[in-house]
Image (cartoon, rainbow, N blue to C red; front, side, top):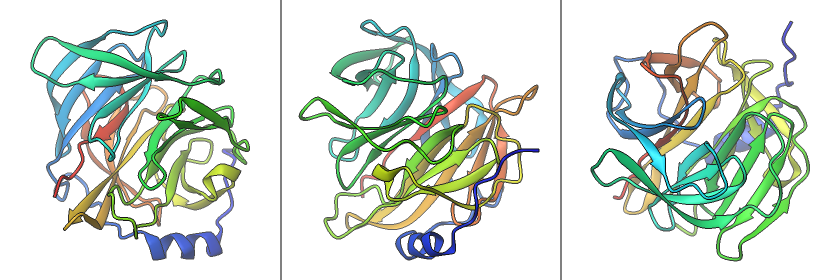
Length: 275
């Protein structure tokens, strides 16, 4: 029987006040957004549209790793609009998405703390401009790209949490943000609050087997530079099954399938809204 993280109504109510979520309704209701993913072994990158994950626009080899041998996660940073990737030895890279057969990586920073774990979640905090890195061992890191320093935050209150995504990806000074994770032991959406404390509270069950290596990202729809709504997307690979792309309702946990990837895509990053 899978271990589950307890529901926390206080944290859930607080998150609900901060998050406007567009409900996922499967492939029929999936919005068409530009997105990127990495393969389960971290050696391939792919581009696709969120309404048709079964069709990949391209598949490329990342080129330019320094010391690292593969990628563990990707995310867009709202401060500069660039796509970033994190390597298995802690290198942090910007990703060139220009046309061609390869994805060119440029190293811009380095985690100053060694990574511990097999599966990782990577996401930028849009309010604090810090890169959050979590792992299945409970590691909880916070990296400042400007200062090139990594803070070791309190371990997560549960292990096997392998995906992370912040809401409200905008630069509005009055916008707060909430960090959602995927707990793969109980196949749950969880809130990490406060993020630096590592405290996890479940919001609900996904209703699907997430597998050990889950991916999550949240797209923020903007109006005049401020978030109007958030839409969450996940990629889950159950044991013995193929990678499937889902819409996810963070406040209930419910996951609705959009389609299957032709490759084992285990992390995704949705291109930012520039409105």
